[in-house]
Image 1 (cartoon, rainbow, N blue to C red):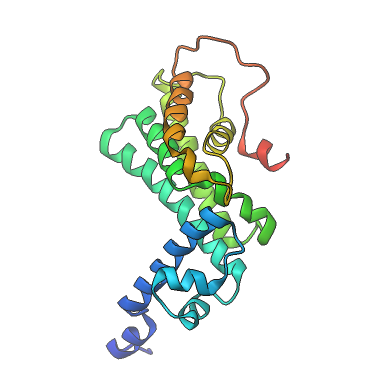
Image 2: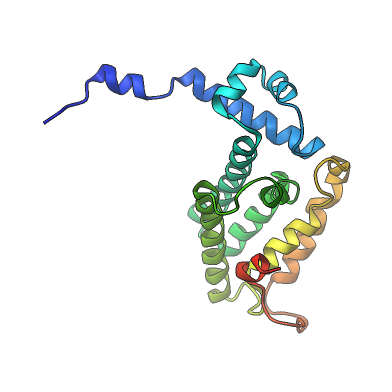
Length: 214
């Protein structure tokens, strides 16, 4: 039976400095995509990340790969926020609140529209990140509804639409100047999700499938 030596394992694992460089590139790209849109030159991203152009291209051979990595990393962090809140407190509505506010901080409304305009929406990495978000938010909302915390006539799609709309404008249009309003308005929205409902919503609860068909 063939065995893998320690030297071989070490050779196949990315070095710590290489991982740090990749994280710096993704972080810098996210900031610049939010500020200026997805067409920021790679050399500007490299400069903000503090690495050379060659390091950017070594990690991300084209713009689609970099945009996809940024969007996936943002979705992973928003899902992790909900998972962590649920594990820490067991309070499903608090986990939903944490997700909504972190999603706004991560600028999902600015970044996610880049998906449809730049690359295949069915890429395996993107699908995995998207499913993680949808699964955890679906679970959180089901638990909040069962606990009598969440009104029964809203769906995951309703939450995602509201987050996108209330944390606008999109990338490159001065979105940072509206920071002081975002969390205030999101909290008003969250308060409106609490049970018992004070009104009857028109239409039916929106699902993620409804959003994909629009």
